[in-house]
Image 1 (cartoon, each protein chain N blue to C red):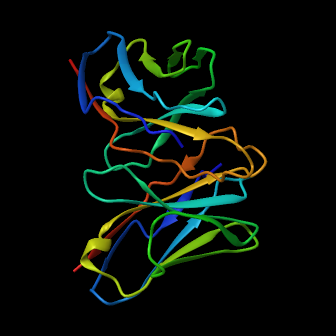
Image 2: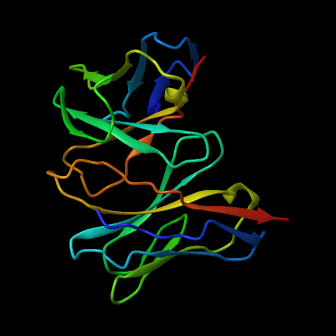
Length: 114
Length: 113
């Protein structure tokens, strides 16, 4: 079992550009959540997807959007990048029918906006 | 979800028990206490969770006070590899609540030789 995999591991973008980050959930999981972790801070919840729809959203602007595919993998898109979007982006997967269990996290994508 | 309060940092000698406290005085009856840790530059790792009874697994023990307003994560024999940021999280676990975890800033645990 490969666990949660994210790609790419590192990325450098220019202010104003758009970026797409990818996540494959742990085998058997159908729910994907995305988090942003700024340097020195705890992860902040962005949104969650299951059944290919956004089900819950944190306090992030509409520049942050996502998608979930039929195979449960997910993408996080960020438009009009700002310097403040530089962070570690984490993907977590869990089982929809197992809400009282743990979420498994990937190693993250380190995004640097210059 | 209820708010949690943790010390910013703690030290522990290798081989000794590490006791990490968490205050969650506003916890509701249907909220669970979860613990995750994050080793530098890695994704968070689940440790343990509980509702009201004490819990133990291969990684740690979770002691929840009778009034549920605080808890302690115990690493019985800390090793250098346990050096990490430890997050105490309180959340409702239901199919309607999603899986948003409020991590806060956590406790930075340093295990020393």
